[in-house]
Image (cartoon, rainbow, N blue to C red; front, side, top):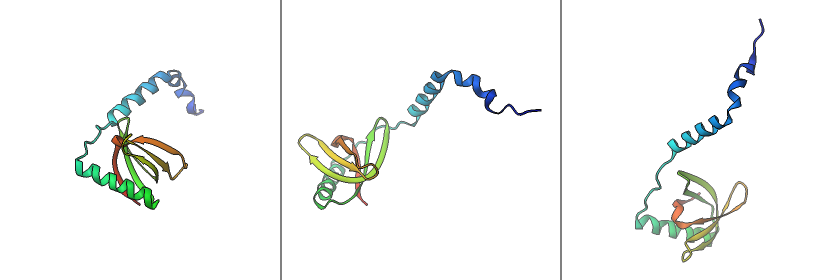
Length: 110
């Protein structure tokens, strides 16, 4: 008697749309609403951003994107309070990310 191995699962792999649909449903269940920040929290984030920019210190940056709260480590390169934008260089890939200040949830020094 021989073991069939992965052959028995091949018929289920013929419907990749099913896997895509299931993954979308799982992602939607994991979504969270964007947290609402108080004025005090927004001021603290602003002060931390400015200090990180001038001292070139590394920060933990938590932001909201597509239903998820994401935390990254990196450096703040530019802050435009009037345009509500800032530029963040991540520590892993050294890529520049341009984000809106309204997406920020928390900024802390490493």
